[in-house]
Image (cartoon, rainbow, N blue to C red; front, side, top):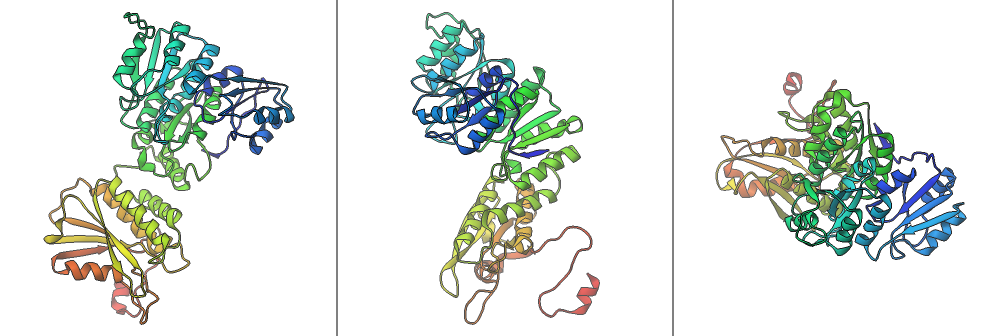
Amino acid sequence: MFAGEFRYPSIHRAAYSATVMRLGAPLAHRLGGPLLLTARDRLSPATADEVRRLAARSAVLLGGHAAIASQVEADLRRAGVDEVRRLAGNDRFGTARRVAERLGGRTVYVAEGAHPDPARGWPDAVAVSALAARQGAAVLLTLTDHLPEETSAALVGLDARRATVVGGRAAVSEAVADALRDPDGDGTAQVAVERVAGPSRYDTSWLVADRTAAAGGDATSLWAATGRGWPDALAAGPAVAATGGVLLLVDGRDVLGAPATWGWVADRAGSVASLRLVGGDAAIAAHVARSAQRVLDTGRAPVGDPFDAPLAVDRAADLVGAAGPRPAGGTADQAARDWLVTRFEEAGWEVAVEPFALPQGGSSANVVAVQRGDPRDAAHVVVGGHLDTVAGSPGANDNASGIGTLVALARELADEPTAVPLVLVGFGAEEFQPSDPPRHHVGSDVYAAAHADRVAGMVSVDMIGDGSPTCLCWYQAGPATMAQRL
């Protein structure tokens, strides 16, 4: 496995620079240079250092002056570059056409290239970048419901005969696919159109990876970049193509955000020689990296166990990273609740946040998840743990371990019928509060006051350890016989 930045030396001493365009991987691979990113108004210092390290003598700027300012060209020359060229159209669709004209070829990929939601409009183009680079095929861009004139003109100019749409109908409509078949509008289908798409960007990514392997890509050399942002996957595309590997998009924050992708990796774990994670911990979190290593070690995707202890550990680490110390009533307390709401909803549970007043002033809340409807008017079992920590403590053991377990249970139990309805609760304000007198167990007291007569039982998930030896303790004074039995 490899985590961090990756740079490979350019045999031809060429550097390739781009901003937000998703089109450069095939051209960068053709030119034999890496794809480097820069700020719009100046050459980024890290990029300038890499240009000097490569002793680059030529560079191509991809995009117009609105994307890459003239100052970047001047900075490149100061970094030792003799020849700076620019490929640009009037917009991103025009720039894609210019790149396609430079590449040539009668086979293209087409992906959504613009969307009001910044999280969309790029994933599919990025996912296919390494495959397109390997094949020397252009990536053209389209709108969801309309084929831009620049893209039609590119198809006609290339005399294209095959176009692969990357992404589902929500990204590229059937109307656009039909327009691709007849780009000059003469009523004759000239382009054979196929589609590769899964229900999410991650599913589309592994389907593209399958095609890459079928096209001769080395499935023993895997690269993974986050699908939550485009820069790492975009920059990696030419490197993946140059080394003959296969590129995958993964959810950098949630190992279960891309279950099919990890299933694809697990199926090949015995033959995988390397899995390079592109980007630092901010892009692919350390707990996701650990889960990736477990997939390779065990050949099992991180889902489907009766209880997935590694997932619980990952979730605990994720909570600590998302909220840190989280005493009741503060902003981190709110961040922890928001995190837990998202995790419960991802697992398919209905969620309610139930606020209550703190004895010292301010408020906290319990996060309550139910499988369907609200069973609390009848007998139910509570499985719960506390979200808050004492001041200054990140609360990894006390009690992110319990909350991580609760989230893993939510995944496993979402569709499991139970004899008595289950209610999952992340309690707020369970640690001692700075009131006079000090109070603790505030959130569970609030829940009990409202529902105690209908609670058939409770399982408390708190300070859960794994391994040997396991330390045992009890609150304040307890019967020695209990300790001895434990």
